[in-house]
Amino acid sequence: MHTAFLLGTGVFWTVAYVLLIRTGLRERTFGMPVVAFATNISWEFMFAFVRPPSGVMHVVNIVWFCFDLAIGYTVVRHGRAEFPYLPRPLYLPALAALLVLAYPGMDFASEQFDEGGGAITAFGSNLAMSAMFLAMLAGRRGTRGQSTGIALTKLLGTACASLAMLTDPGSAPRHDTALMHYLYAGCLLLDLAYLAALRTVRRAAVRT
Image (cartoon, rainbow, N blue to C red; front, side, top):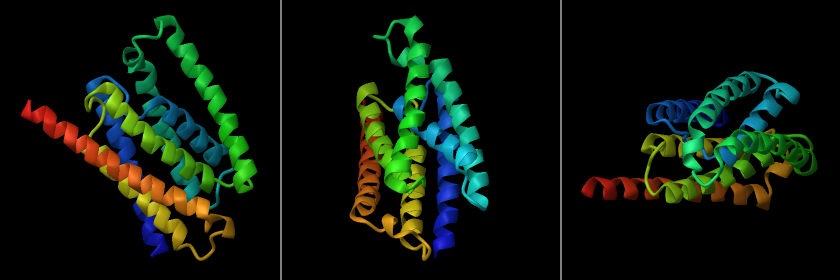
């Protein structure tokens, strides 16, 4: 079961990345909230090149980092339009500052809370990402750059990752804690809420 859940994590999150990139390019926007993108690419870089895990997950992290670069292209290319209140010359410097701040934050959190591992930071940033997707849906007042497919594959990928952690016989005791169970449940609930909200907004748009 553990292996099956790991496989599901890889498949569903890879599909989510592809859909995010495709939707962003097609609709000339970005599909992943900017702060979530900054923490996500920082995590992928860290565990692809700085502290890589052994085995197939090292390769997966490298592949996901490459997908993050493609998402980053949509953020750079089309992101200015999503922040009309920000002076145009400040957009790229602000994005660069965000990326510079995100990496050491993820690194320090990993060292302090997970002994250099990636579980707590992965699920913590995923929980924040789930909340940011809801905020982006509300802020854009529509589904631009978003889709049911993205929401569903993110939900399923994160759920599989949670189940993989829970069924891993070699999982460290620090991953079977109240905090981790809170993160598993929080991600699931917010992802379900985002999927439901997205579908509601889409149906309302069709009726009008």
